[in-house]
Image (cartoon, rainbow, N blue to C red; front, side, top):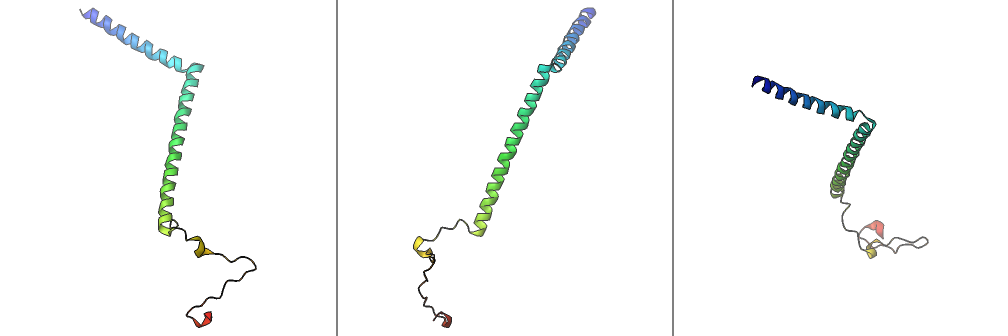
Length: 102
């Protein structure tokens, strides 16, 4: 009974060692190295994409903070309120309450 136990134990350990060594040897083949390289580059590309998304989200939040703080999102004035003088034309005289305006 004891010998049978140790025989089974030896076979099990031997099978596990062979499987581990064959996996390690497979990783050292050109295809294994290329596969590991591809997986590493894919992970790197995913990390860079996530970083870019985080940066864009943070930039959008900061831009919203700045716009709300400076009032840049206020509605634009109506067109007739913002008539700019054309070259060669003078604005009509303003009539104000100050002596300098007269």
